[in-house]
Image (tube, rainbow, N blue to C red; front, side):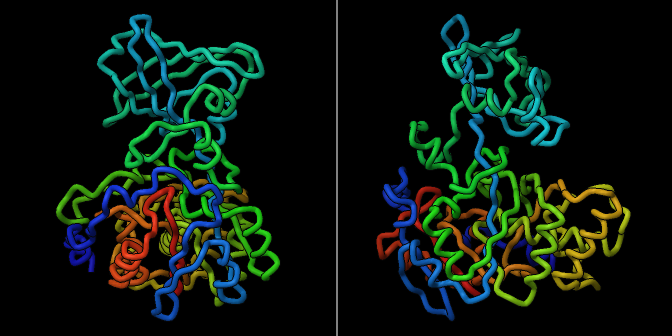
Length: 405
C-alpha cells in the first residue's frame, strides 16, 4: 500500500484557480460567507450562519484553538536596510514556556534580506501603553533554510507581550499584500487561546459568537484542542509524486480531559473544524497505535508514513488507541500531552476518528487537497467545480465546505 501511495501524482490534484477567485480580504461579517455542503452525495449551497441547522444530531464539533502570533519582526539597520526576522518556533523549549520568558529566548527563524545582516545584533524599538521598550536580535548558526536567533529585551515583559506589540501578523503569501490593521483581528478565530501559530486554522475564521451560541442551543457539543500551525502549511508539493515530498512537523497539545470527552463520544458524529484539527485527532490515534506496540515511548512523534506501516496487524478502535494515550499520560504523571506530528493524509488513508469536516477551499497541488480527497474521494472535483461555477471565494479568507461521511 505504501509504495502505491507514494506514487500518487500530484498533478492529478490540480485545478484551475483564477487569481480573481482568491479572497484577498475577509467579508464584513464572518458568518455570512458561503458554505458548500456535501451530504449523502448531494452538493448544496448555504450561508455559514446556517451551520448549526445542517449538522447531524449528537454531533461533537472539534476546534483548534491555536492563536496566530505576530511573527514578523522588522529591524532597521543604521544604513536604512530592513531585515525581517520571521519567528517559526522556539528552540529547545516548549511553545508556552517560550512565550513566558521575560528576558531572553532563542527561536528558529526565517531571515529576509539576510545578506544585509553582516554581523552584530539588531535592535527594534516599540511602545506599550506609551512606555518605550526595545528588543535585540542576534543571529546564530543556520538550521536548514532558517537560522537560530537569540532575542533579548528589558522591562519585564513576557515574550508574548513583546511579539504582540513589536511584530506584525503574517498573512499567507498567496494574498500578495501586506498585513493591515484589521488583519490582526480577522486573521484570528474568535476562540483563539494559545499563542504559537504562524498561520490561522482558517476553517475557524467563519465562526462568530452567535454561531457558537446557536450550536449550543441546538445541542451540538464542542471541544477544543491545539495544533500550532507552522509555515510549512504553505509549502507546495513541488515533486512529481507525493512520496518525494517531506511533510513539515507541527506541535500538538491536548489534555487528558480532551481524550476522555472524545472517547465518550465514540459512535456519534465527530466533525473536525479544519485540516489542522483532523491531523491532530488522527495523529493522536496513531500515537495510541504506537503505544500498543511500545508502551514505554518517551514522547509523541507521528511520522508522515506511520499510518501506512503501523496498520499492519493492528487496527484499534478510536477508544482503544486514545485509551493507550491516557494510560501513557497517567504513567508519566501528567494530564497534558505535548507532542509533534508529521502526518500525511492522502487518498488511501483510512480515517479512524472523524466522520465529517468543515474546511476552506485549498490550493491546487497541496497536501490539504490530498487530505480532502482521502475523505470524499474524487467528489472533491465536483465540489470545487461547483464552487468555481457559483461564485465561491477561495483560500484563507474565502468560503467554506461541510463534508459529511
